[in-house]
Length: 98
Image (cartoon, rainbow, N blue to C red; front, side, top):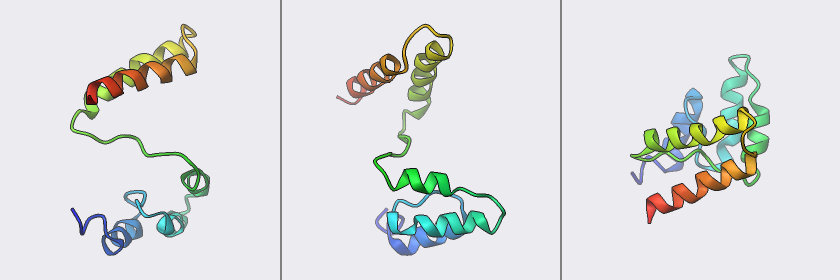
């Protein structure tokens, strides 16, 4: 695990463009890997430099994904606000990890 989180490991992963780096200083290397393929991912790099955090990857991701989709489907259907959906997902997520 220590090696997977290391800069050496992250550089290998970033060079293939397979996973966004966990080390912020490698963001531009990831963008460059995709530019070589003719794909502009610079907008994602801009957001990654801000306060955005990655989607949670856990052993219960499948359950979490269903809860998120259920909540946000109500937004797409006009039955609840995005804020209410986000709040409900946050509350359920926090309750699940306590």
